[in-house]
Length: 287
Image 1 (cartoon, rainbow, N blue to C red):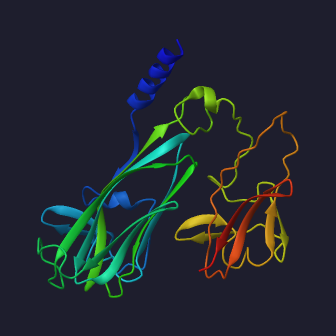
Image 2 (image 1 turned 180 degrees about the vertical axis):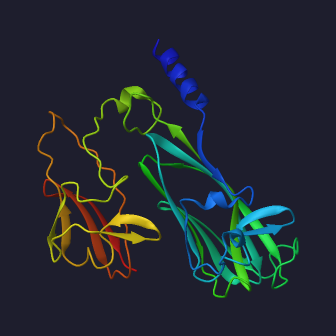
Image 3 (image 1 turned 120 degrees about the horizontal axis):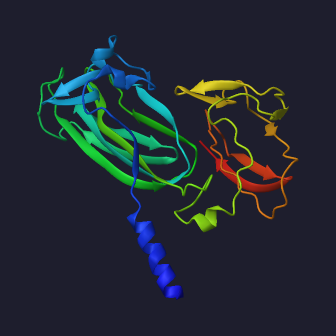
């Protein structure tokens, strides 16, 4: 009987389908730019944020994304435990071992390009080669917010060296309907966890948190177009933020899911998460 139940569970888990929650950049509709933050672009008109190469509409390209360009967006998601990402990343003209980066929260995909990579599949301002690669990956993810960023180490203006993206599609595997958070499709496991509190998913106000140390006010800022609590000039040396949760039901374990952002240069410093004055997580940063 136990073997039959296990077999049924496996079949149910493997038959679950991904739910698509976002797709864009398969055409040159400027309405797709809503919600995206574009920094360091060359283009002045919205329509110039797209470049057509052999009938393929690419978001970015020789009029837009060169040195210093960063494209970011944050998504809010229902309870889930996996994310699937599919996207084409393009390079235009003469790169010289510079790299192209694609971030999905703390996951990174990158590739290095040279001028000889690709073919002259379409006319570009610098007359160089064009190439692309596809990302089709599934990652473990159960945070309510998803941060996505595209960038590069290009060291020339977009009309000399540029990049773009095309056919972005994001999907997730949902938690069981009765679960506020989960690590997989098993409702029995996730029902053990009862959501208690969430902060800074949709709004970035104090929400009962207090700051101690060299900074005593909870302030927000914007990094890469994303609103965050803290940031430059707010949370620095010897600053901690704290909140007391004093109306918990009887329990025996606590789960914390959080996203920590490191900004600027750190020199062998630590980020720390403590619960009831006990250190539960520490990350050393030396860059």
